[in-house]
Image 1 (tube, rainbow, N blue to C red):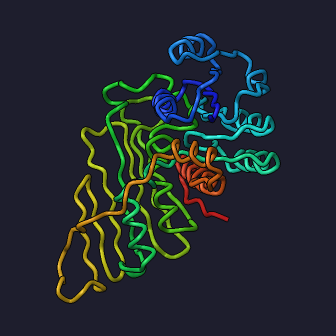
Image 2 (tube, one colour):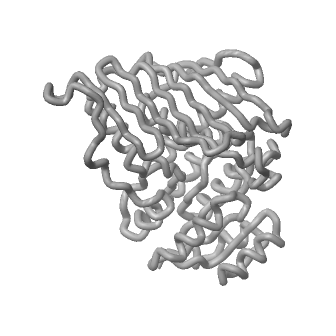
Length: 327
């Protein structure tokens, strides 16, 4: 049995993570900590677990094998370094941390302690993204010239996100730091090392952080990614488009179309695949299974750091109104 502590209910996904772990069958939630004790105490009562107001005291407990970090993003580095130093395995909500320097601190602590780490990249477990990666890896589309990804909803427009979601001190940013993480890590997976980035952020609802955002990223392989995200768009169809020198892939919601010079001559036009790759378990489940069965973690320190590298540069590009080059 894997014993897990929930470290804060701050993130909007925290309750779902706890529910999925409780349904796992081989996981037991043993304790809750929260930077807001009243919220944490109430949540612990709902989950039927202990509440501990002091993080260090909780991390000293021997009946905790791993922790799920859903604290404010600005607290991630401190919380995860402490967890690693206490010998606890870590699952964290994205983003890993606000800066690459913070990610490096976490990575050093995790490696020194020899614990396992996983970050939540759920889009990389889904059939459409797995199919896209398969086409890129197999060079079916030729050399990739343009990638466009869109991910959005109307959470800021219709006020169904918590108000602290717009507190930059806690979140580090708005739409791009939240929903924008998904297209960012997809772009990183498909295109590799970034070369430079520009940003266009907008404040449609006049909050302290952006609610509508776009980044243009050039990669070392000469591909360009257009990353679009929004908290003010109604019924936004997810979009993943990949344009290459020998083919094109178009995905919108559940519609998948691809055309390629590399297809059999009998199929010269657009086709929809009869079968997509099998959906993988969500990262939170893969993390738990990896700990229970001593398997390799799916999305680790390197992937988490690469995401933060893109996000940190995106916000610098926006705030300083310039193109940021990667080292």
